[in-house]
Length: 119
Image 1: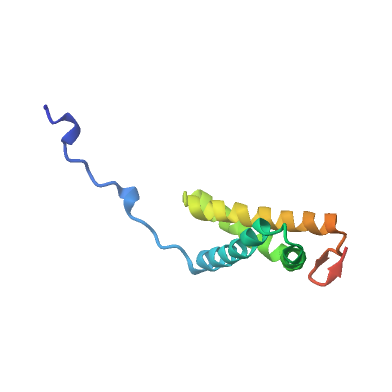
Image 2: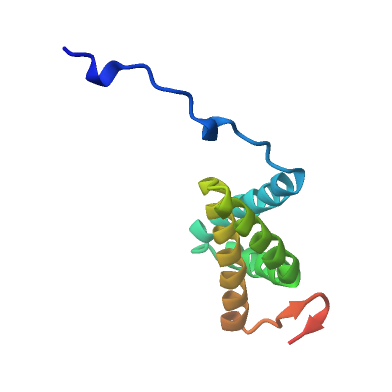
């Protein structure tokens, strides 16, 4: 072998990882809690009790939806620019859960309440 593929490579400067800010970790933790709460309920939605629980959870998510959408929009733009795929996907997933929750409330016929204002 000529050693073509085994020559020493220089260290990449991009490998120096910057620390993620605390606000990004807080938003990611809230998003993970939402995912951990919503996914099992969606799987078990066949049982009537879980349908009622999911409608209640959807009301909670829609109630704070402006905060969730703004925070996840901020997290998405920050993580997308720095190429953090996991946080980018988590922000997208959380926004989709908020939109799904609003759709569930509309289909269920429940009142859509955002910060105490009923629509």
